[in-house]
Length: 141
Image (cartoon, rainbow, N blue to C red; front, side, top):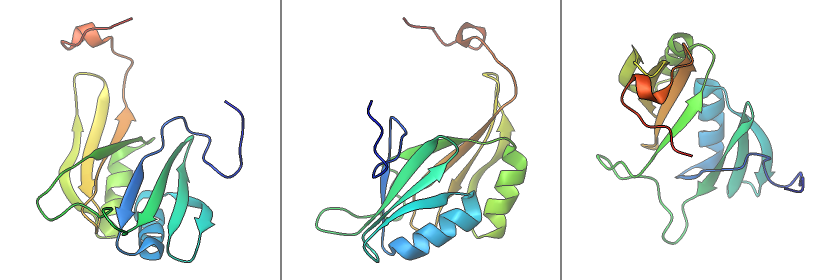
């Protein structure tokens, strides 16, 4: 792919809708450690980075809206170095922790949080390199 400074370099870029883009950018930075890289309009969109990943925060407009209470339309997984410390940071900033840090047979420690707009996030720390066949998965390709 050709580089373009106007779009994140990540191959897959989720776009999440928030009622207040500026408040979402501030909260996602404080609670989860995202860094704003591009602002588009005062409250229209923002591109955020985390490591080599990215997410775009967009405003409510026409048919775009955040999840309704009790509705889960998606979840974003973000890899982190220390899931327990990351969870505590998120909790301190008001994230609703849906699943405490838990170790899984597939070599990951994960926790799940909900942000103020209702988006679900799973943060995953790698504990070991485990072949999918060791926990019941199947390697394909």
